[in-house]
Length: 261
Image 1 (cartoon, rainbow, N blue to C red):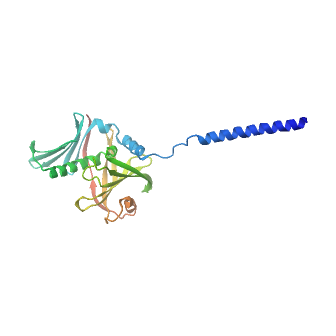
Image 2 (cartoon, helix red, strand yellow):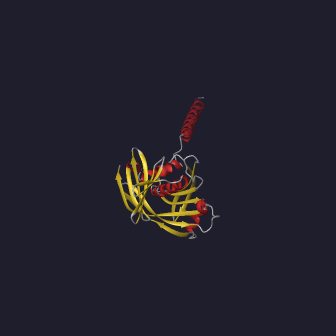
Image 3 (cartoon, rainbow, N blue to C red):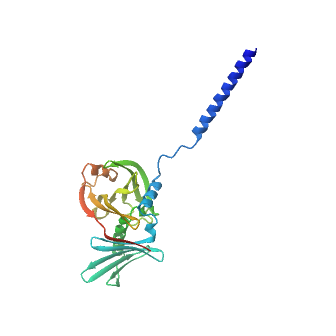
């Protein structure tokens, strides 16, 4: 009888240990799994932070591109973008704000049709936009989608598709952009875009000559074009890897100056 009681006691203790172990395993399994991937917003936020962060907001910039001077500054809390062209004895100054565009010839305001003003305004904005990347990727009209990862020149990149809402996206809101962010540094190493004006086409840009000026990252670009308009912009990096893109130009910004507001 005593032996039977001892056996039952041992079995009871074994069952208790089994249930305790099972509960511990279940509790561990129910814990939230560690995060192994980033959202597209987190990728862009990290890229902006590593490329300049708050310096984009509280610093003015000046540079030359293709013999024209470009200036970005703040006036009464509003961002003002300028382009200054020097033609012999004539100086043309284009001034773009969030609500207007004005052209001055030797300090005299000239009248422009809406269509011409809009074209000049887009041209000024485009140069400033590309120079300040990735900062503009958090604008309200920007729609971002993480497509996955892609290896270019032996380095892994986050591949992000960017489109624009019609409201606030400008005249070229239907253009499609793709950005490749280095997976380790989060810096945008490559970008491509599909455009429709002037007959349309595709461009692929390879960043080089990275430098920081007073906390803001600037790069130059090798500017490539695809040989066929039928190529999907999402596949253009594969053509670059195969050497099947044509070098169209080099995009270089010179005489950079960055000063606090």
